[in-house]
Length: 582
Image (cartoon, rainbow, N blue to C red; front, side):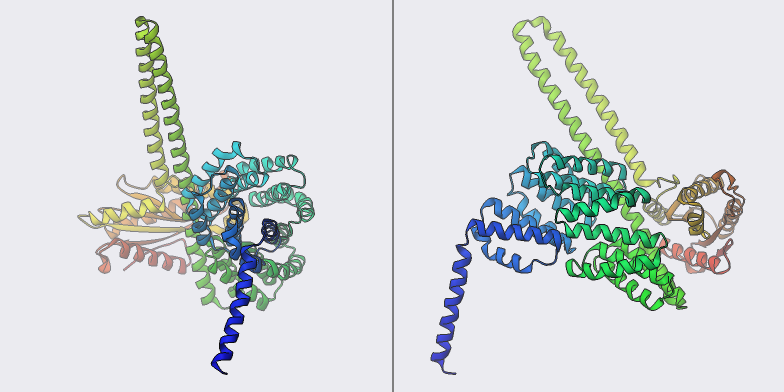
């Protein structure tokens, strides 16, 4: 090919590209608005089906008006959220938020920000974004902005398991329907009612709302939301024991789901439920296939609760296949993830308390500042009228000082209460895992003599929850802790390490002393009368004991690990016994 011919081709390509750029640069506002509307419709019906529209809009971005630019970046952030790309979602919103002054658009950006922070586990930042949205709520005029603000609150309250409060916000969202005709708030609000009732365990109530919610969403063109509701219904079928019906519906939904969104947590939930249905109907090959798909999807999305649930399902599948070592690996992974879920929920609640306290503290300061300003104004006015009123101003200042003193006392009490919450397990009133680990580690560092660690785990505790309910399980944990505390010395530290596992740190104690305490606690637990719980059943626990300087142990971590090994030996020997690490 000659150089002249190459030059001619190159010139032609430049001309074509130039024409394309020219067309993009001079697209009319109506064309851009049409593309944005097309993108919005695509996100509602098929979140992963808009790459061409996004590409076109990206080329036209320099020509956008401010309103068009706000819409574009909101849709882009929303698409990141549906794809599970929450870090990119947060970074995008943070880069734009300071440029947005319009309240309607600002709360929609804050919704994307709070949802992204929630997904990333940064709950204080998520709560702060929600607080700003709520402050702006009276200034909003746009329907979608109001829906986003309420939905952000519902999502966060669900993550905190504050379901009753979430239901209140769902009802408020439904009340928006009358403000604008053909609004999608009814679809989202009714869908929220269905999901929250499923989360609360109100299955019959959720089922009664489900058909209406699906019809509303389809009537409003919200195909994706309709699909999510069908997924919830399918999972409920399987959870209710209708394995064949649920399996058939679930496989059909998987095909439809794969066309719309392949990275949603709802897809992972559906795959895990289908795996359980195949397991219950004896098809272990298909159970393993869908169980592994769900497990890998959960891991790729770093969804801890889903990872724990899918790992537990895989453990059951591998046990049914007779592959017990692999089943044990999955079970250990599920147990570790369960502890992560418990820690994660604790962090959420702590973040909620911290932000709630900070908000209340700022409100108190603002209120006091307003009162002080009013008093100063009154003082100036009184000074002009008559010097005799000076005593009134002094009295008012004295009132303010009293209020400040009362506020300071209340603030200190709240801080002390929060400190106690952060160190204590809410159910059993024992030390929580973080506080136990920190204090025990410090005690080991400062020890002057022998120290012991006792770990114990309630035997077959899951059977109690499954047979008699979680309320009975909670009754057992509280009574076991009260029983064990009566046998401890004042210097001993007692903590709940997660689920039904507990630990005792014994300063200045040798192996024989620790062994005696473990045996007393084991026998005391076995003698607990369970009849006050409403049921009669046996209780027992397995214990592991390890003493520092025994068998070469010198550190807290090594002693804790040794006690854990001794505990597993007790489990292996048939439970309800004490083993000492030697």
